[in-house]
Image (cartoon, rainbow, N blue to C red; front, side):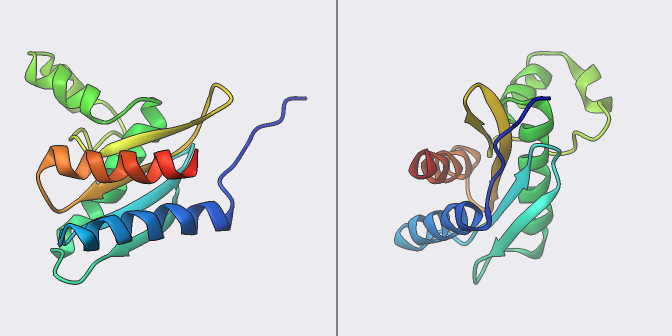
Length: 134
């Protein structure tokens, strides 16, 4: 039988509070989502001023990164590069930059998704939160 690491409540809290702190320092009104390796939401935080849609987008970016086991930007780049068929991929609705996969001992254990500012800023915030965890 195999065993695998999972994100604990304290790690989920650390990801959310780290991203929130960094977003507040930059005055970015964003939503931050954390999902497990199956894309199931574990935590969501929508900061003051963030558009309601940003919560949905953050979850989908994180879900795409977790299920695909790669950052969501990879899919955006493929589509922009002409592989439009990826638009019909099942269960991948957040194929936009801003979802960052979380890796531990060679396994994807979840992801963080951020939405609300420029795509590269969303990704930066998610990546910094994940780096704080590891």
